[in-house]
Image (cartoon, rainbow, N blue to C red; front, side):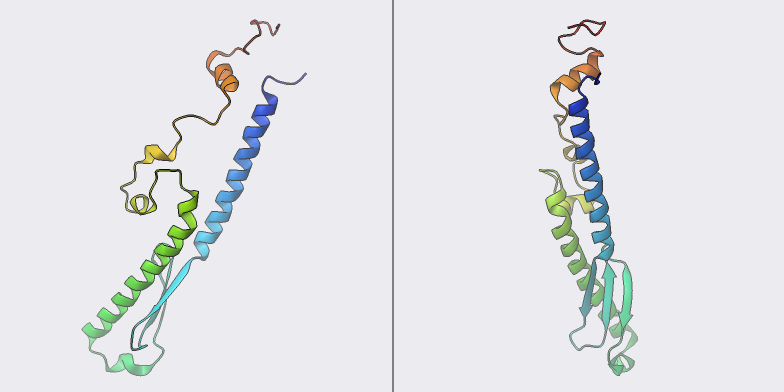
Length: 147
């Protein structure tokens, strides 16, 4: 004998497995995001990860040796800022299609998003399953499992 709503529950579990696998794919893709920026005079090249964390800094030429400390500092900070914008753009491109309707990526990463929009108002659960969870009874059956 099969359980009430076994087919619906199997469908929900399959959807859950698909979403979990997609989440793992997204996590891998996020870890792989990298963006690089080079200063206009090619003196500094920086690389950042998806969250803007500095993962590399290079000095392709010896020109940095002739720069004043504040000039060098400004060049590094400018290159890092440019690379962060590129990394954020790559992250946005990856994540925006995955976000629920009405949830804005920029608001999300800035902590301004209305997170109530992340969960649907109406559950994807079939109504009969919802009734069973709410009442403990299968519609059309008496309390002893008789229809």
